[in-house]
Image 1 (spheres, rainbow, N blue to C red):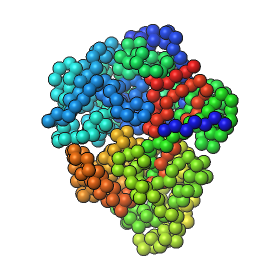
Image 2 (image 1 turned 45 degrees about the vertical axis):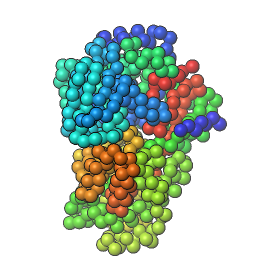
Image 3 (image 1 turned 90 degrees about the horizontal axis):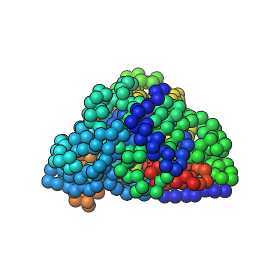
Image 4 (image 1 turned 180 degrees about the vertical axis):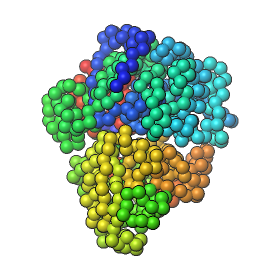
Length: 525
């Protein structure tokens, strides 16, 4: 058994394709890989979502990025330092976009301002940025509304675009994904990154070729010059593709098939604890739920009902039966490795059906109620199966749950448009800081806060911790914020996800806790 545990529009732009073809002809290697879901869009500022950001990160680059150990490292910026007004970044010289235009500070200013617009799912990351000063072609200052000690950490997924290309193609504003907007940037891309998209058939195939003019050529250990990505929704078909040699790498093999993969000559699987929590969210702010038989009241508005749900969820059974052991039962929407994680908060309550039934009765719902649970079926490990298990568990306390499992392309807009009563969501933390969780999920008006949860004290703490430079004081603010959130229980955490990748021998893709394949480090023998 081989198991290693470690920490439908084709795009063809002539200049880009020629550059890519030149790179592919220098003895490089091809890697074929798959996962259950394609990128939702190629617009780099539209959707802050793992697979989408991972795909866009092959084409676009940010000022700073993370290496496979999740250390913050230079990318388009070679250095950065705080100033009286914000942060100063020195840009890498000689960088060109795939279309041939040189990268300048003006492109950085354009991109930061674009990512701050209302249709950008990344705007929450840079709310502290009030302006961008172009000092010269290779120096830019991000002006903030106060000291922001974590701004570099917030920029790892803010990709830089060619301002001229965006203007020429009428995409100066990010795609409105929740409104299903069609724009040029959702199927076409022009970044500075190591790979160029040469073919793009959404939900079918994406082909990328190495960028011969990439600034990082020869500076990284990877030898992959062609990437062929094919999303395969069906789990059995996905693993069969690996077993047959059709693909070299599966990002999310079915957990129940890992032993089979490990026992197959020439294949192996690797695992690592992911920085991602899986949880249920509730619309507790509505006067009445959309999908419930209760009229004139909202059961989820009562914290006792939310706590009853938590007591009824058997996380250990989900870990054992649904996840084949590859999860870590949890009690907070932060996993180990995130600043602010707390072992006490992360200890989930033991299953107690009697106590849960008592809480339901105290809240006035002793006879139970009905509700729809919205769940993705192609995003997280065994996501639909988790929801199916929860349906049975909640029936024991009188909650009659109807499951609606949909592809993430249909599921996420329900959350972003506040059209769900009860839902499953997972949350990774690219900044490795709790502020990211609070600002998106718990702060009043957070772009992924579909719960209606609002607490002025928490809001004030979230704002204060963004500008606090004293580390002990900031840590205390984060701890206080978690105390408030845990008492209110706007979400019920199920577990923290454990990643599993399946690979062919002779293929090395460094595995990272953020589930992002970094092909600049990948080696194919």
